[in-house]
Image (tube, rainbow, N blue to C red; front, top):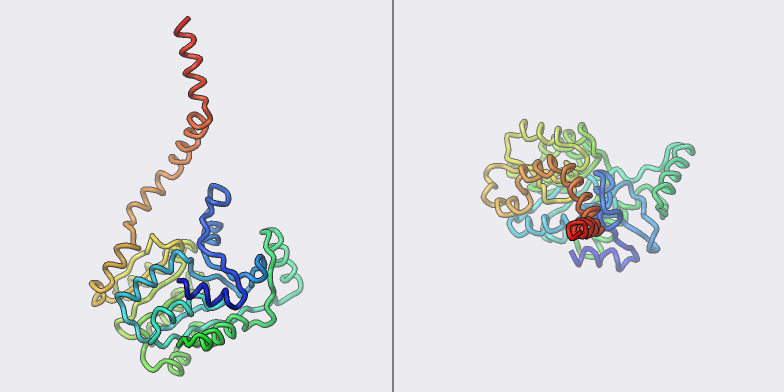
Length: 307
């Protein structure tokens, strides 16, 4: 993790990642919390670099680190690169592996009205934006950074699913045994990304999907589980709610990692069922106990009893 942060910091970038929204406002909603936990690139301290998306949370990096300790992947395919955070991460953790990422680049606003509306949204969110000078900034930056740091990572501009097969055929010497899917977060696109990689992947390939829970992609993930006839689960201990898919032959190999990051779903469901009740109990605790009202009531009742 330290090396990844330092790669960006030495080039004048700041990293915002893994913020607990409770530190900001004491409460959260799903999308605001997801945005706070993810990783974004900044320049000049407070100007967000707009590259079309974010990266995995710093609190998700330990998952990749632990996977690297139990699985020696040799060929890695990634859908979605943005500014290269995940691509460089996996290249650091699997230094001998071939790492190829497919990214469509950051498309500029098609119309002046669209551009003005996006500027308004940035203003509304209180964001300053450092505008990149070309749509391929993230691709170019990642490739140059990988080369400078002697990392075996390569990003290619293209679109999934159409460009998955030709890109893999050109740049990978063997079928992928690890795939990280972090492209467009829609129900149809997740299916398309998986199916495209499945066609070129090895039989023992492990698939990791970002943002399954936070972007409500469980329906597609469950469909992938059903049609793949592989093992899989939601990793509830990751901030984005990642999904992982793997062949039964790798169950023993991955079991220690999945036990840590795949917290029992029943705990999550129980917390969801009781969330509103806990909020009421917490509010009552703050009002009645922390405010001192209970002491005032006891004082009044005590005075009345003595009389």
